[in-house]
Amino acid sequence: MKLKHLESALSSVPTQMFPSPKITLEQYPTNAFLVASIMFTAMNKFGDVGPALSVCDLGCGTGMLGIGAALMECDHVIMVDCDVDAITVAQENIREMELEDTMDFVLAKVN
Image (cartoon, rainbow, N blue to C red):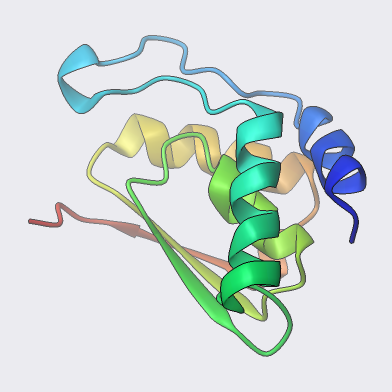
């Protein structure tokens, strides 16, 4: 997938914002260009993202990085966050993008 196609697909995520961000959890949206650049580099430079690979997004927030990984055809994406509201937003975004089959969610604090 080309960088511009990935960015375009990520730009179509309908709900990218937290309704009530928790500043102490550093909850802020990650824009489509940044996510596309990270995923594209992870795949093409390091081989860390792509088909036959699994990805774990620690602190998934709105789910943008996990969505990017799924769009890059990762076989499985594990989304982890310590905030139930963030998990809810991420689940809504993934559902809207019709990517639920590749995602699992874990509510946990990772130290």
